[in-house]
Image (cartoon, rainbow, N blue to C red; front, side):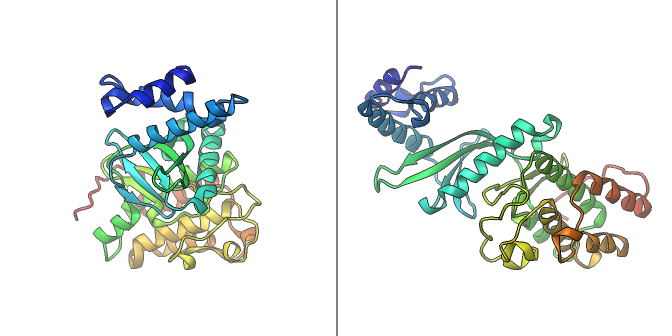
Length: 313
């Protein structure tokens, strides 16, 4: 779709049906954003760029008309019911964190093993949108992930006395796969917290979300999630370099917290080895750590078997 066609369509539309049509509205939306996105207009006439920007505001405003379904750390998420989420920065000062997420997910998609990409959300697009009422510009990340996910916070609420370690085992294993995928692509998540680890109970799926605090190995985690300061290893609060071991320490904390007093001695010893006070003494290869975890689990429980899992114990 050409830019001039997109502008005419948006300015003439009086209803959502006029704008998106009745057939494949998601496709029409992507065509409009593609035609109107300021990064794709190059050296176009300033008047054309201004008209396109105003049209983009109209498109993105209409597209995110559903009320926020989830409140994230820095953004509100609007669920369109078909697997797509529009993640909109709550404050313009957090636009840079939204841009971090987009960069991280693009890098993982480009350099990660395609077999494991379902362990992170898929980035469809990232673009600025101006609020027509205030004129404030906020960054929007359009994401896709599987439905029916629940956070580890939900799991702990369902099992307040601690989760059976045999159920925690598959969550731990898959979380290490998500980290291995990211680390091989050169991305540190930077905020592996229970609220960011989502599980699909029936299929034993795991998705690691909210990459807004991500960094490259050797870089700095840009911020701490308020209220979770004590979940971070020392290098984050001290503004020292992060690395794969930063994520591994936080992931380990999530899993021991999930099991609580039900954590077996052998798994407790394994966890202690992942949470050293210095980054240099922690494991830094999630794939190798996964093999070591499997050895511990095999000694405890024998060969792996599928255990049905429910959030209604």
